[in-house]
Image (cartoon, rainbow, N blue to C red; front, side, top):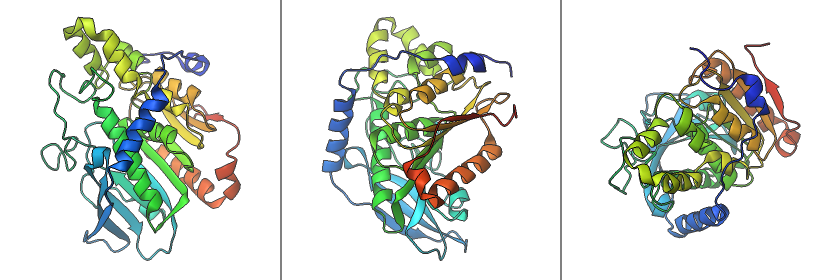
Length: 340
Protein backbone atom coordinates (compact mmCIF):
# COMPACT_ATOMS: atom_id res chain seq x y z
CA UNK A 1 0.00 0.00 0.00
CA UNK A 2 1.68 3.24 -1.05
CA UNK A 3 1.07 6.62 0.51
CA UNK A 4 -1.99 8.17 -1.11
CA UNK A 5 -2.14 11.37 0.96
CA UNK A 6 0.23 13.75 2.70
CA UNK A 7 3.39 12.58 4.42
CA UNK A 8 3.58 12.30 8.20
CA UNK A 9 5.59 15.53 8.42
CA UNK A 10 3.00 17.34 6.30
CA UNK A 11 0.14 15.94 8.39
CA UNK A 12 1.81 17.01 11.62
CA UNK A 13 2.13 20.55 10.25
CA UNK A 14 -1.42 20.60 8.88
CA UNK A 15 -3.78 23.22 10.29
CA UNK A 16 -6.93 23.01 8.14
CA UNK A 17 -9.32 25.95 8.03
CA UNK A 18 -12.70 24.24 8.01
CA UNK A 19 -15.99 25.99 7.24
CA UNK A 20 -17.99 26.00 10.47
CA UNK A 21 -21.69 26.88 10.50
CA UNK A 22 -22.42 29.90 12.67
CA UNK A 23 -25.28 28.06 14.36
CA UNK A 24 -23.48 24.73 14.92
CA UNK A 25 -23.79 24.82 18.70
CA UNK A 26 -27.39 26.03 18.58
CA UNK A 27 -28.26 23.27 16.09
CA UNK A 28 -26.95 20.53 18.35
CA UNK A 29 -28.36 22.07 21.50
CA UNK A 30 -31.80 22.14 19.88
CA UNK A 31 -31.41 18.59 18.59
CA UNK A 32 -30.35 17.07 21.89
CA UNK A 33 -32.91 18.99 23.91
CA UNK A 34 -35.66 17.60 21.67
CA UNK A 35 -34.34 14.04 21.97
CA UNK A 36 -34.14 14.20 25.75
CA UNK A 37 -37.58 15.82 25.95
CA UNK A 38 -39.03 12.90 23.98
CA UNK A 39 -38.56 10.84 27.09
CA UNK A 40 -38.42 7.09 27.34
CA UNK A 41 -36.51 4.75 29.62
CA UNK A 42 -33.54 2.52 28.86
CA UNK A 43 -34.34 -1.20 29.16
CA UNK A 44 -31.89 -3.98 30.04
CA UNK A 45 -32.90 -7.61 29.44
CA UNK A 46 -30.56 -10.44 30.56
CA UNK A 47 -29.25 -12.65 27.76
CA UNK A 48 -28.08 -16.25 28.18
CA UNK A 49 -24.93 -16.39 26.07
CA UNK A 50 -23.64 -19.64 27.54
CA UNK A 51 -20.68 -17.74 28.99
CA UNK A 52 -19.92 -17.70 32.71
CA UNK A 53 -17.40 -14.87 33.14
CA UNK A 54 -19.35 -12.11 31.39
CA UNK A 55 -22.96 -11.10 32.06
CA UNK A 56 -24.77 -9.66 29.03
CA UNK A 57 -27.92 -7.56 28.66
CA UNK A 58 -29.91 -6.73 25.56
CA UNK A 59 -30.17 -2.94 25.69
CA UNK A 60 -32.83 -0.64 24.25
CA UNK A 61 -32.28 3.10 24.64
CA UNK A 62 -34.55 5.95 23.48
CA UNK A 63 -32.54 7.75 20.79
CA UNK A 64 -33.40 10.40 18.23
CA UNK A 65 -37.07 11.42 18.62
CA UNK A 66 -37.32 8.77 21.33
CA UNK A 67 -36.91 5.97 18.77
CA UNK A 68 -35.52 2.69 20.16
CA UNK A 69 -31.79 2.07 19.68
CA UNK A 70 -30.45 -1.40 20.39
CA UNK A 71 -27.16 -2.50 21.87
CA UNK A 72 -25.43 -4.80 24.31
CA UNK A 73 -24.21 -4.24 27.84
CA UNK A 74 -21.44 -6.57 28.97
CA UNK A 75 -20.40 -6.71 32.64
CA UNK A 76 -17.66 -8.81 34.24
CA UNK A 77 -19.54 -11.52 36.11
CA UNK A 78 -19.48 -11.11 39.87
CA UNK A 79 -17.75 -7.73 39.79
CA UNK A 80 -18.82 -5.10 42.25
CA UNK A 81 -19.57 -1.59 41.20
CA UNK A 82 -19.73 1.04 40.16
CA UNK A 83 -17.36 0.16 37.32
CA UNK A 84 -15.35 2.12 34.83
CA UNK A 85 -17.17 1.98 31.50
CA UNK A 86 -16.26 1.89 27.81
CA UNK A 87 -19.00 2.93 25.37
CA UNK A 88 -18.23 1.70 21.85
CA UNK A 89 -19.59 2.76 18.46
CA UNK A 90 -19.27 0.64 15.34
CA UNK A 91 -17.71 0.96 11.92
CA UNK A 92 -19.59 1.73 8.71
CA UNK A 93 -22.14 -0.93 7.78
CA UNK A 94 -21.71 -2.89 11.00
CA UNK A 95 -24.44 -3.75 13.46
CA UNK A 96 -24.13 -4.89 17.05
CA UNK A 97 -23.82 -8.53 15.96
CA UNK A 98 -24.21 -11.45 18.34
CA UNK A 99 -23.98 -10.97 22.10
CA UNK A 100 -20.88 -13.11 22.63
CA UNK A 101 -18.70 -11.51 19.96
CA UNK A 102 -17.09 -8.46 21.60
CA UNK A 103 -15.96 -9.15 25.15
CA UNK A 104 -12.55 -7.45 25.42
CA UNK A 105 -13.58 -4.58 27.70
CA UNK A 106 -15.69 -6.71 30.03
CA UNK A 107 -12.78 -9.14 30.36
CA UNK A 108 -10.60 -6.18 31.32
CA UNK A 109 -12.98 -5.53 34.22
CA UNK A 110 -15.10 -2.71 32.79
CA UNK A 111 -18.72 -2.21 31.88
CA UNK A 112 -19.00 -2.24 28.09
CA UNK A 113 -21.89 -0.59 26.25
CA UNK A 114 -21.95 -1.40 22.52
CA UNK A 115 -24.37 0.65 20.40
CA UNK A 116 -26.09 -0.65 17.30
CA UNK A 117 -26.08 1.85 14.40
CA UNK A 118 -29.48 2.60 12.91
CA UNK A 119 -30.06 1.05 9.50
CA UNK A 120 -26.74 -0.81 9.54
CA UNK A 121 -25.84 -4.43 10.24
CA UNK A 122 -26.65 -7.86 8.94
CA UNK A 123 -28.66 -9.62 11.66
CA UNK A 124 -32.02 -8.41 10.30
CA UNK A 125 -33.07 -6.38 7.28
CA UNK A 126 -31.80 -2.91 8.05
CA UNK A 127 -30.16 -4.11 11.26
CA UNK A 128 -31.56 -4.43 14.76
CA UNK A 129 -32.11 -0.65 14.84
CA UNK A 130 -33.94 0.37 11.66
CA UNK A 131 -33.80 3.96 10.47
CA UNK A 132 -37.40 5.19 10.45
CA UNK A 133 -36.68 8.02 8.00
CA UNK A 134 -36.67 7.13 4.30
CA UNK A 135 -35.40 9.82 1.95
CA UNK A 136 -35.17 9.47 -1.80
CA UNK A 137 -32.45 10.66 -4.15
CA UNK A 138 -29.40 9.30 -2.34
CA UNK A 139 -26.74 7.04 -3.79
CA UNK A 140 -26.17 3.68 -2.05
CA UNK A 141 -24.86 4.15 1.47
CA UNK A 142 -25.61 6.53 4.32
CA UNK A 143 -23.57 9.70 3.77
CA UNK A 144 -26.02 11.31 1.37
CA UNK A 145 -29.25 10.37 3.13
CA UNK A 146 -31.07 13.61 3.78
CA UNK A 147 -28.07 15.59 2.58
CA UNK A 148 -30.16 18.54 1.38
CA UNK A 149 -30.81 19.68 4.98
CA UNK A 150 -28.98 19.39 8.31
CA UNK A 151 -32.30 18.64 10.01
CA UNK A 152 -32.87 15.63 7.75
CA UNK A 153 -29.35 14.25 7.56
CA UNK A 154 -28.78 10.65 8.61
CA UNK A 155 -25.90 11.41 10.94
CA UNK A 156 -27.96 13.91 12.91
CA UNK A 157 -30.01 10.92 13.99
CA UNK A 158 -26.97 8.69 14.59
CA UNK A 159 -25.08 11.25 16.68
CA UNK A 160 -28.21 11.86 18.74
CA UNK A 161 -28.61 8.11 19.27
CA UNK A 162 -25.00 8.00 20.45
CA UNK A 163 -25.43 10.85 22.94
CA UNK A 164 -28.54 9.22 24.36
CA UNK A 165 -26.69 5.91 24.59
CA UNK A 166 -23.97 7.62 26.63
CA UNK A 167 -26.69 9.22 28.77
CA UNK A 168 -27.96 5.71 29.54
CA UNK A 169 -24.46 4.51 30.42
CA UNK A 170 -23.87 7.48 32.73
CA UNK A 171 -27.14 6.76 34.55
CA UNK A 172 -26.66 3.01 34.92
CA UNK A 173 -26.24 1.89 38.55
CA UNK A 174 -23.28 -0.36 37.73
CA UNK A 175 -21.35 2.48 36.04
CA UNK A 176 -19.17 5.10 37.68
CA UNK A 177 -20.20 8.30 35.81
CA UNK A 178 -16.77 9.81 36.44
CA UNK A 179 -15.08 6.96 34.57
CA UNK A 180 -16.75 6.72 31.17
CA UNK A 181 -14.69 6.53 27.97
CA UNK A 182 -16.09 6.49 24.41
CA UNK A 183 -14.37 4.76 21.52
CA UNK A 184 -14.81 3.37 18.02
CA UNK A 185 -13.04 2.53 14.80
CA UNK A 186 -13.66 4.41 11.52
CA UNK A 187 -17.33 5.49 11.63
CA UNK A 188 -17.28 4.64 15.33
CA UNK A 189 -14.23 6.86 15.77
CA UNK A 190 -16.01 9.78 14.16
CA UNK A 191 -19.08 9.18 16.33
CA UNK A 192 -16.92 9.04 19.45
CA UNK A 193 -15.34 12.41 18.58
CA UNK A 194 -18.76 13.95 17.99
CA UNK A 195 -20.02 12.60 21.31
CA UNK A 196 -16.93 13.94 23.10
CA UNK A 197 -17.79 17.37 21.74
CA UNK A 198 -21.45 17.10 22.73
CA UNK A 199 -21.28 15.44 26.17
CA UNK A 200 -19.22 17.20 28.86
CA UNK A 201 -17.46 15.38 31.65
CA UNK A 202 -16.28 12.22 29.90
CA UNK A 203 -13.11 10.56 31.22
CA UNK A 204 -11.70 10.00 27.74
CA UNK A 205 -12.20 9.33 24.05
CA UNK A 206 -10.32 6.87 21.82
CA UNK A 207 -10.98 7.43 18.09
CA UNK A 208 -9.29 4.94 15.76
CA UNK A 209 -8.67 6.03 12.14
CA UNK A 210 -11.79 8.18 12.44
CA UNK A 211 -14.28 8.69 9.63
CA UNK A 212 -16.46 11.84 9.23
CA UNK A 213 -13.58 14.28 9.79
CA UNK A 214 -12.87 17.12 7.32
CA UNK A 215 -15.58 15.58 5.19
CA UNK A 216 -15.06 17.92 2.25
CA UNK A 217 -11.41 16.87 1.90
CA UNK A 218 -12.37 13.23 2.32
CA UNK A 219 -14.80 13.54 -0.59
CA UNK A 220 -12.07 15.05 -2.76
CA UNK A 221 -9.20 12.65 -2.10
CA UNK A 222 -10.44 9.33 -0.68
CA UNK A 223 -9.88 6.44 -3.06
CA UNK A 224 -12.47 4.10 -1.54
CA UNK A 225 -15.95 4.30 -0.01
CA UNK A 226 -17.64 5.68 2.02
CA UNK A 227 -16.36 9.22 1.21
CA UNK A 228 -16.72 8.41 -2.49
CA UNK A 229 -20.50 8.35 -1.97
CA UNK A 230 -20.37 12.17 -1.78
CA UNK A 231 -18.41 12.51 -5.00
CA UNK A 232 -20.77 10.06 -6.71
CA UNK A 233 -23.80 12.03 -5.53
CA UNK A 234 -22.37 15.35 -6.67
CA UNK A 235 -21.39 13.90 -10.04
CA UNK A 236 -25.13 13.34 -10.55
CA UNK A 237 -26.40 16.52 -8.86
CA UNK A 238 -23.83 19.02 -10.07
CA UNK A 239 -25.71 22.07 -8.79
CA UNK A 240 -25.98 20.90 -5.16
CA UNK A 241 -22.35 21.03 -3.99
CA UNK A 242 -22.82 24.09 -1.78
CA UNK A 243 -25.92 22.70 -0.10
CA UNK A 244 -24.42 19.25 0.38
CA UNK A 245 -21.15 20.44 1.88
CA UNK A 246 -22.96 22.86 4.18
CA UNK A 247 -25.20 20.07 5.46
CA UNK A 248 -22.21 17.79 6.04
CA UNK A 249 -20.42 20.50 8.02
CA UNK A 250 -23.04 20.11 10.77
CA UNK A 251 -21.91 16.51 11.32
CA UNK A 252 -18.19 17.01 10.70
CA UNK A 253 -16.53 15.36 13.69
CA UNK A 254 -13.43 17.55 13.31
CA UNK A 255 -15.58 20.60 14.05
CA UNK A 256 -17.38 18.98 16.98
CA UNK A 257 -14.08 17.66 18.36
CA UNK A 258 -12.92 21.21 18.97
CA UNK A 259 -15.60 21.42 21.71
CA UNK A 260 -14.29 18.35 23.53
CA UNK A 261 -12.33 18.62 26.78
CA UNK A 262 -11.77 14.96 27.75
CA UNK A 263 -8.31 13.46 27.27
CA UNK A 264 -7.98 11.50 24.04
CA UNK A 265 -5.97 8.72 22.43
CA UNK A 266 -6.04 8.89 18.62
CA UNK A 267 -4.78 6.32 16.14
CA UNK A 268 -4.04 7.27 12.54
CA UNK A 269 -2.75 5.08 9.69
CA UNK A 270 -0.65 6.75 7.01
CA UNK A 271 -1.61 4.37 4.17
CA UNK A 272 -5.35 4.60 4.81
CA UNK A 273 -7.24 5.20 1.56
CA UNK A 274 -10.66 4.94 3.25
CA UNK A 275 -10.12 7.65 5.89
CA UNK A 276 -7.12 9.55 4.49
CA UNK A 277 -4.70 10.48 7.28
CA UNK A 278 -4.94 14.21 6.58
CA UNK A 279 -8.65 14.08 7.45
CA UNK A 280 -7.92 12.28 10.72
CA UNK A 281 -5.18 14.80 11.53
CA UNK A 282 -7.70 17.59 10.96
CA UNK A 283 -9.66 16.26 13.94
CA UNK A 284 -6.51 15.59 15.96
CA UNK A 285 -5.17 19.12 15.52
CA UNK A 286 -8.53 20.73 16.28
CA UNK A 287 -9.28 18.52 19.27
CA UNK A 288 -10.10 20.68 22.29
CA UNK A 289 -8.68 18.53 25.09
CA UNK A 290 -5.33 16.94 25.84
CA UNK A 291 -4.38 14.32 23.27
CA UNK A 292 -2.12 11.35 22.70
CA UNK A 293 -1.46 9.95 19.24
CA UNK A 294 -0.35 6.60 17.87
CA UNK A 295 0.70 6.65 14.21
CA UNK A 296 0.88 3.46 12.14
CA UNK A 297 2.97 4.55 9.19
CA UNK A 298 2.77 1.33 7.15
CA UNK A 299 -0.85 0.38 7.76
CA UNK A 300 -4.10 1.00 5.94
CA UNK A 301 -7.55 1.44 7.43
CA UNK A 302 -7.04 -1.44 9.85
CA UNK A 303 -4.63 0.84 11.71
CA UNK A 304 -2.89 -0.70 14.71
CA UNK A 305 -5.26 -3.65 15.11
CA UNK A 306 -4.49 -5.82 18.13
CA UNK A 307 -1.35 -3.81 18.86
CA UNK A 308 -3.49 -0.71 19.31
CA UNK A 309 -5.99 -2.58 21.49
CA UNK A 310 -3.08 -3.18 23.85
CA UNK A 311 -2.29 0.55 23.79
CA UNK A 312 -5.91 1.31 24.59
CA UNK A 313 -6.05 -1.16 27.47
CA UNK A 314 -3.03 0.50 29.06
CA UNK A 315 -4.37 4.00 28.44
CA UNK A 316 -7.79 3.27 29.94
CA UNK A 317 -6.33 1.49 32.96
CA UNK A 318 -4.13 4.50 33.71
CA UNK A 319 -7.06 6.89 33.54
CA UNK A 320 -9.40 4.73 35.58
CA UNK A 321 -6.88 3.93 38.33
CA UNK A 322 -4.93 7.21 38.59
CA UNK A 323 -7.32 10.02 39.64
CA UNK A 324 -5.09 12.94 38.57
CA UNK A 325 -5.02 11.64 34.98
CA UNK A 326 -8.75 12.14 34.69
CA UNK A 327 -8.58 15.75 35.80
CA UNK A 328 -5.12 16.59 34.41
CA UNK A 329 -4.22 14.36 31.44
CA UNK A 330 -0.95 16.18 30.74
CA UNK A 331 0.55 17.42 27.48
CA UNK A 332 -0.15 16.07 24.03
CA UNK A 333 2.24 13.38 22.82
CA UNK A 334 3.08 11.63 19.58
CA UNK A 335 4.19 8.01 19.50
CA UNK A 336 4.67 5.81 16.48
CA UNK A 337 5.35 2.18 17.49
CA UNK A 338 6.51 1.42 13.95
CA UNK A 339 9.10 4.20 14.02
CA UNK A 340 10.39 3.52 17.53
